[in-house]
Image (cartoon, rainbow, N blue to C red; front, side, top):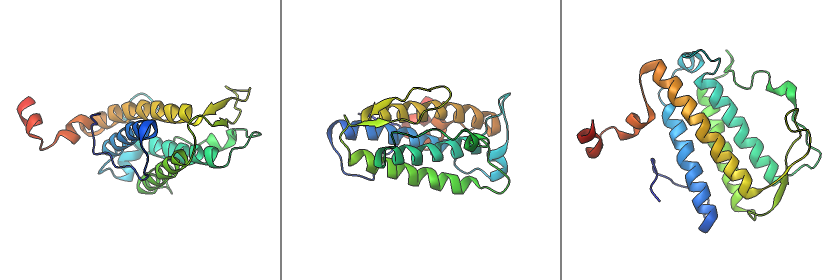
Length: 186
């Protein structure tokens, strides 16, 4: 399969696990490209009518990678989402840095990949209840990876729009820099 980025997994897997994790890694890489070379000030800047910022997405996705890994490694059939913890979930606060959340994102992604590698894709994991999901759901590890892929791709699109409005950089242009085919195409 062709990817937009160079995909290297932090785990040795094959078959379906490799396919799923490689697609997810490609989306993560695209997200990192969208956020490369930003200052903290730029990461906090709103560039659309939305409250969303690039720093907020980095914070949100870093938290999500870590929480998803924890759900697989240490499933809790009584878990409830702590709504009070979500107050600044999409906000890069003045005492926080983009680099710290990008590092947490990379580390959380590796932890998630290790958890998936060590699991059977059919294992059911209890999801935390939340106001929008008051009944407990049990998702397979496969479904969790698919959800993580969807969530990351969704936010990659957001990040690309916000970044383009910030300084005209697009992810596709950034990954195409210096490529012979790109020079001929543009």
